[in-house]
Length: 319
Ligand code: FO1
Image (cartoon, helix red, strand yellow):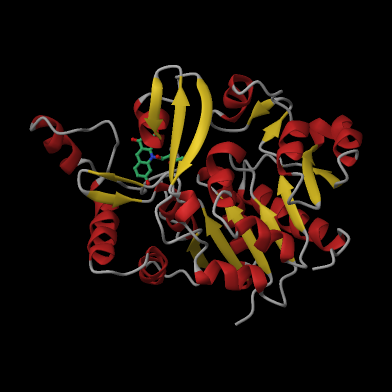
């Protein structure tokens, strides 16, 4: 079946928009291309946090307080692990563990991450295509004033406190987009590619760092539209603004637009940043202002619909 929309997404913020697309009845027409730079091996298990956040969110099984992990979670395993002197800084709940066990087993048996994810989504009753950006390992590493840290060491164990100097994606040069992702981006019926309001440096850049991904975006005739994760100079969630400052950039929506400029046609600003509209247009981008703060389910649906309507109104590029 042909696809009309592609969403490039990281974890919690992107999953909210993805839920809006699903609720708007667009899930069957959409491929969700997900960051795998946060993936890591922990306690011998293969953990894919952004894939799981999206999968649980779309299946109505996410812990809505944290935005990650399962609702109605129990922590027996983690408590016993801690008692026995095991590592408990990365909180794996009992229900969540079932997914990591199955994923680890299937990958060890030679399945691709894309196949494993499709099987898990099917079991959770999802018809949406949730696609890891790549089947190879791309590991985000954060160079900080305290040394090079693996992503989850930086993000969870050290609560994103160390000062960031650079972000690297180990393995990216050897990785390639999965065949399913390439097929989605090359679909002749594709009408829009949306970049979710995820962290550009930690969630979207690991996708764009995969050779072939940028050229696939540029070759697509569909408009590419990004939604700013920075509103009024602040990140809606997580350390985006802090990282921008540490990297010597201004924490503003304009800076995010500048970052994405080579690959996008349009940029969505929050109403609060309406005054920045001229600066973004000066980058050669179409702009659109709306509410981008997704507090309710209705907000998620509205933003999804606005992003797609805006993308359709952006001038069609020559492929
Ligand atoms: N985030 C935390 O802040 N603390 C945790 O203990 C934690 C555990 C965890 C377990 C499974 C999972 O899928 C995600 C988990 N996350 C946790 C979230 C996650 O590591 C980050 O939010 C993402 O990687 C960033 O998108």
